[in-house]
Length: 82
Image (cartoon, rainbow, N blue to C red; front, side, top):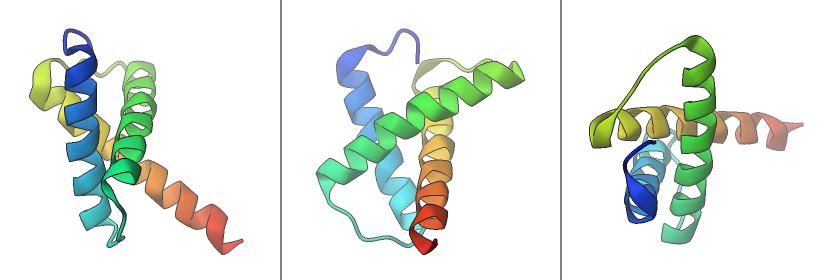
């Protein structure tokens, strides 16, 4: 998430974590949404970089962070079932 800054990371992380929470039908708190969103943003950014997908600005960062957070919640759910 280039050019967004630390406050932008937090805002995008909370928003992405919230959207991922609703998509995955989970019930979490604000802090958990932030953590899931920021970690999801890192995961999504890493995977987008590997795939050669360029994203920029708030909207691109939000989309990648949300997809990464959804993937993270999916993987955590798979690990919990085992």
